[in-house]
Image (cartoon, rainbow, N blue to C red; front, side, top):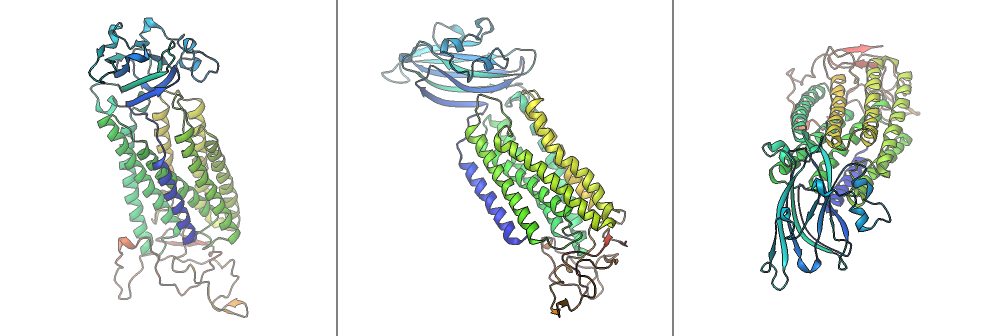
Length: 515
């Protein structure tokens, strides 16, 4: 990829970040506060997944006396409950109250006549306008964790509803890791912390491999892309851990922070996917550059990917109904991303087939690459479809979080194994030095490069890579600046290599092999 194209992709993600941080966010914290004024007689307030016995709702409601007696209604996730009233056209306020069972304490009447609401008549809080101040709580019992949906109603009102409220919804009083979390979010913080440590170790290993590759002048663009993907995954996990740690300590969610983390996750996924397609095309393995038509196709594909991510995040922030438990990909752009992932896999298969056809000696790298990453390409859509159609809503968030992180880690780990610069690694893909790429831009004599003696598109097989690290002029070992890992040496090899088609040979970084 050209430097200008990378800059263009970077600008897209900067714009994406600004858009989502500025979007209005839903109040889905475990502490929900607000002032409600509406002409409706029935409204939805919030939802939470409570554990049986350990789930608790603490509330403070302030209701103006002149708005009459308002009722807080508690629905649970049974088809006869919430699903039977929410977004069902034609139902009146009274009909929406039918599933509410007083014997189950599903109703809190905000009046002094209802003892369990803890209401007091107050004439001093708002001078000239008496209010009812209600403070109390509810515990929840069921045979499993359930989503509970909280609504407000006054079916006899002619003025609508007005309410100042504060709701604090908790699980497991004595456990910091569970108390402020909805039951479907249990263990997410612990899993994210674990994967953060694992990914940091993986990133450090990749830096060491990069050092070894650079000392052998084999530190190619594709490996740099791999490290960018790893780095973005680490940033994503660290921001996400910070988000959930803040929730655990304060009870407040900051959706903008979570979206910011997801942007880095998206960059990590897209960079890794792009790297796989480039490798399948043979870039940095059998060729030093792509044909212009191929580069245009890849640019168009990645542009569509970025646009779909942007639209999907906007769709979630603006159009997702907080009264429904929805998954991020349950939207038209989400389905589009699934389709693009499968399209990327088809291109990956096509490119791998023709690269192997032309360079069969590379099968030790491309066979495992194809097998493992075919599974990686398909794992994403399968996880998404299973999450949307099979996994229960009260466990979906934590299950999907763990599975998605496992899929990402396995992909990154396998690539590290395939490309490790070890003498024992027979799968090592690179055999042409970074200093040789570009040498083919040599002066021509009668239409033939002055230094070339063979077909420009297919040089004869020859061993290349050094068996030891490159030495300095004085014979000493090179001193590598780790800050220069992402800079290709300006020195060029005297040995020309066709930038469009590398020689038919391969190396593991320590020992060279020829077909």
